[in-house]
Length: 165
Image (cartoon, rainbow, N blue to C red; front, side, top):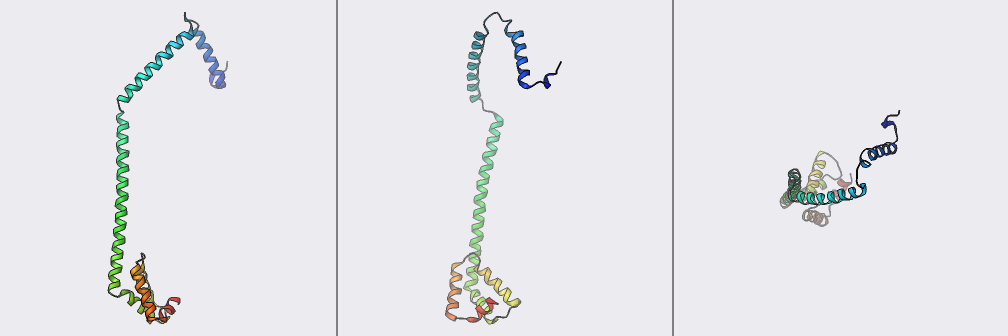
């Protein structure tokens, strides 16, 4: 005798169906088809009633999950707005500081210091270049235009000699 788990699945199912048919269906007095139709039609009506009942009774777990997911999405969108506002404030602060340095003559001072070096590199030139880069960082158009106008008006060759070195 072979155990059921060694049989192919379709053979085991067929054996089960044959034994079920012999033990239950053939012992019934009336037609199995009529009984099946009655059972299935009643089951369909019961399912419809259950669906209506389920629609009326919301699942508390489902409600909790929906509540927390909506809350998380709302907080995420608020965090995104706060992050954008923070970045915008940082950009405005940087532009303000650059403009303040520019009005006090920092841009011209950077250009004059670099021009005065006449192509020699050193610690002063590198720190002056870093200051110039920080003044121009962020694309401050006013400072860029002022520096360009200064270089055009003064026609300083020393600046370009130092910049190439």
